[in-house]
Image 1 (cartoon, rainbow over the protein chains, first blue to last red):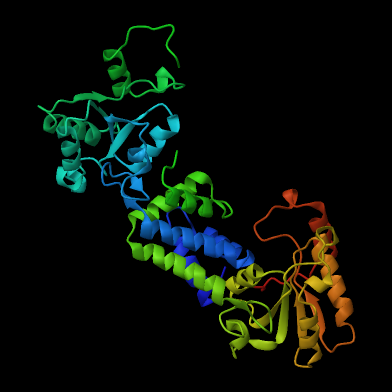
Image 2: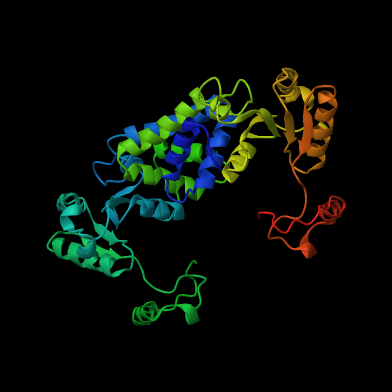
Length: 205
Length: 205
């Protein structure tokens, strides 16, 4: 395809810069917008511009927020004495999707990774310590990814939280529901045996 | 994934309306823009808004244009006595990409399709007749898709162009280069035998 319009070329170039959008898809999207009423483009550009301009991070938990506090921190029905520490706002969304967790969150914004030049000072660690030192926090659940960096970060945080009146827990590691033992990696398998639980026939799935 | 920010939800909804963009991709794109500098979003929304507002269709050939005439109609190096009739601006781009055609175009904006309620009056037919009646046109090449509707439209146009001093040709139909006889549909195969050509050993590929 050869594009003869500079306006179209600019739009395709801008769309092509998005992750996972190739040149052909970018062209298809741009031509789609041209065929639609002008309102469709206005709606899209307006929503994206508003998101980038107005969205901020919650002053308490660093989750994505429309106002000073995010919807979860504002919600009085949530258990504010429970903090689930996660890496990114995507993790918040994934846990919220389960509809099982009723506490609050703390988004670190990453994990300690010396190879990537990310140290504790690059993460939202101090604000977590301040929250835990307030005395209003009962339990901190570490829900970081089960990687070397994740485990290192959990270890670092547990050391920093020592002496504060909070219980530290981590999410359960083990065989995922629906997966097969045969194809599970050996570290997960070994950990799930070492961390075996009493059998509970009445346990909900 | 559960989205707790209305701003993010609006952006995801707007992206989700684009063809081929699912909910997960929409979320990934929105979060990507949030991580990038604000300029990235401004560049994207600006390019899309400008395209939709400023792009128009060439007053001569109905190709996409940045000004009154498209770049091809403005180009004095192109043979203005040759018109290639195509269905959409995508077809213009595809033919331009071959870098073999040096004439001009005429974008019909579709083909005659009674089932879809598209008649000759919905297409850019009159402007083609005006161009051909000017006496400056030597040849009209019909480059419509080889479908029932495409063939019907070519037949209709050839009847309307009768009596005008223009030669009417169609692009060659036959077995595509690189394809296999065995898997070619019977209509194409029959046509390519009926429309056989003298063998030319020196012919360029």
